[in-house]
Length: 236
Image: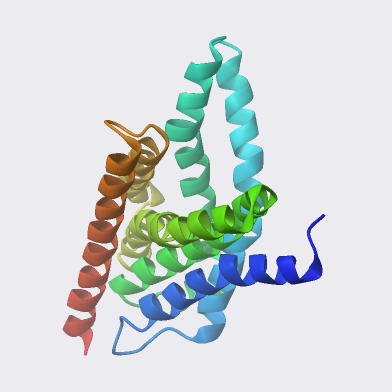
């Protein structure tokens, strides 16, 4: 049984790192920074509606896939590397369609910021779910793995969803078809799937897999922030 104190530790460990990243990403923009209200709304979407919708979509896609494939290991592989990225990268950036968020997308970098924030909200709730399981094994086990997730998974969700957010922002500001967002959505799924492959199917070893995955997300988030700063300088 998880005590009140343990729940408090779990909530803090799950949500504080993504919230810190949220502030970091939001403040990357120097000119015309996004309002805290729209940023927090985007985070809350990622932490709630996006999680529920992604879970439902994952179940439906897994059922459909399992109907034609009977090998459990194959189903597990495709669920982690293909199905989860499709479902999650579809539901997270829908936060940018919310009116209070959409009306604040006035510059190209705004899509990157809101996409990243929605991803961070999703990672916070995901941390909570995984953290609860970790806690059942032991506190040190929980502490070690939640730290790993707070670095790797949080930055992964931020980086991947920022890509779709950028595509949506470009489509919105240039008044083009939403179909123009699709290449960015595909790129987000590839980034997400590649990370999942490295973490869950550690080749050629656990430590190497984690190391490569972490380098991957550090490069990804650095490129996202660099792009935000470049676009921001053009409008200052």
